[in-house]
Image 1 (tube, rainbow, N blue to C red):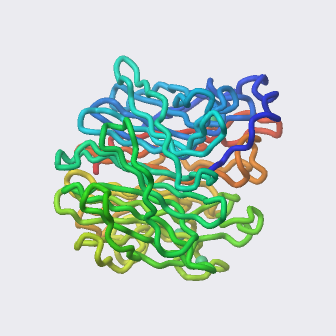
Image 2: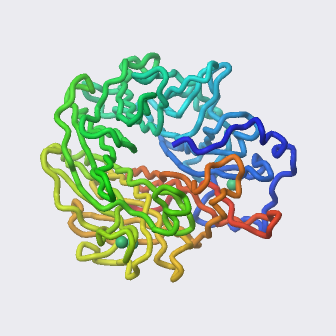
Length: 474
Ligand SMILES: [Ca+2]
Ligand SMILES: [Ca+2]
Ligand SMILES: [Ca+2]
């Protein structure tokens, strides 16, 4: 989602002093990815993460207002060459000549170690595109080429909220790059589009419209199964407070697609007071929220797993505003299980959340051994339902039962978001998603985290940064 304001009136801010840490960082198990020295005084927002890994190389993408204040591009990244022990802030993904990259990072990697980095992008004429950049090298530093720009179906439309998947199966479609995103046509409505590259990211196909039902759709995500099958999922707004998770599947590398199915129907999450303040769905602390699905496939058996967050009691005006849900399909997406909450309820056999506090922004990954991990923001440790931790729900039995574990070492607070303390960032924005990938030895979450307190004109405030963690058994 576009999250920044236009630069012109705010350049004056960038000349002010760099924000100071207060107190000094207390680095522990969680590793900060971004370098705070790159921040402007008021422009210190790093959030909305993506992560990909190849051997000891870990790349984390994020939105970065500090870089935007200085370079005009919003899509930042950092990388680690030692498996995630230390990170180098690499600044911004380079835009095309005269253009800019506009955030919404999404990363993937192929079997040869080429990283692909998708972003919202503009060309020199200000046209809206999805950009996908490929690494030029990963040694001795991780350097990306400028992105290849993919137009929408409507040249006057706005292209938004892309995610990416790379086929690394070694099968018939190995190396293909898949991108799905939302187009806002000039005439109104929204639609989910798909494009692919079959030549290593040199060129991308003319978009195909994936969404069939409804004109209120957002938050698409592609993923690849063990036989190269592609699933794409997205949120469909059902009118009122109802939402749907829509899914389609392709068995031929994205040339043709099966019918559109509903994997889940739910009540969208929203805190009435924050929603009134933000004039869009938001949770306590004026954090804007959508209900984007996260989807992944078990590479052993092809089972499909999907997570999203929703209001558990069907009433936005009372009770719990948000729980994390899970559904699965063992027949290639044709039918889906009944949704279960995985932060509390009968399926949670250890570490259940005993509160009615918020659980939101889930992201799901399946480990090589088939274990399922879902990370999410969680407010169970604050009776005021404000401070946030990162938790994971983990299932070792295909999603039948779950345990919950805290990832973050410290809960973090929420800066003033409406209006946003950072004048380059949209009101009520605290990132729209986080990300996790899995390997045999660990899951690797990357998330937006405000634990670091900085000096501001009105006293200390929590500052948005991006953190990474390893050593968490899948
Ligand atoms: Ca920051
Ligand atoms: Ca409720
Ligand atoms: Ca909850």
